[in-house]
Length: 260
Image 1 (cartoon, helix red, strand yellow):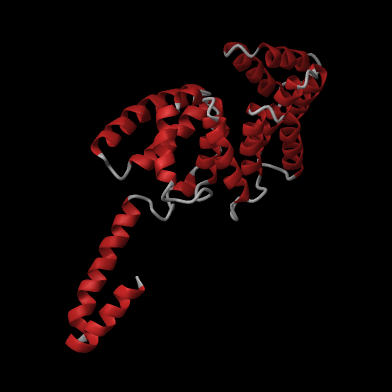
Image 2 (cartoon, helix red, strand yellow; image 1 turned 90 degrees about the vertical axis):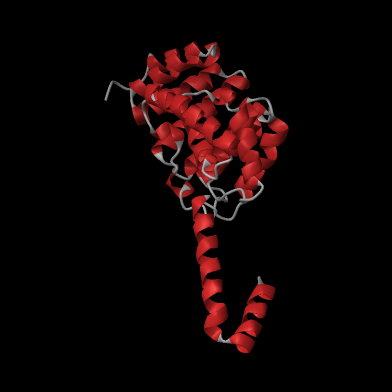
């Protein structure tokens, strides 16, 4: 870039300012437009919110089906809009608890991440790390979660800590995951993310064989979010075959707060 500027200044001195300035300005406008078209600066990514903030999983499932079709069509055509659609699809899959279907998406985003640093879009990077872990690709998930946790914009933020702790839990480092979750809960995470942090803490307690402690965590969730939040946990856990978490949720409901 410095060489180009130097050449432009030298040419302007020799041939006249406007002879060189107009083409240079045209090139700058064209490059800026191309960068905005592919979201190079990450302006579109900052609108992402944590997936569980959206309450309707059926709407998320319908959206994910539509995004799958759009993602594959854009990918085939080589469109620069494929990456933003891939991130939206990953969030929709997280909303309806179908990250195990996200292999094709995370593979595409891995290539996209080669050109944009981890942390530019904390939500998408966190969900990408979790998706890799749920796909059994923990060796790939670990560095993504670690870089997100160390990113200047994300350092110790609850969303980065949650992603790191979730990967650690899948990786079998349950005690480390619990310490990270407890630290993040003290940081007053937002309500949607706090729910997921409490669920992760309950799962970690179950991994340690402490069903009573898991039920206590879920009772805490019921006090904060109402019985309906724990009933949703019980139903979703039973549907995906997570019997231990479903039993802990049912146990918590017996002493939970009344409906709100």
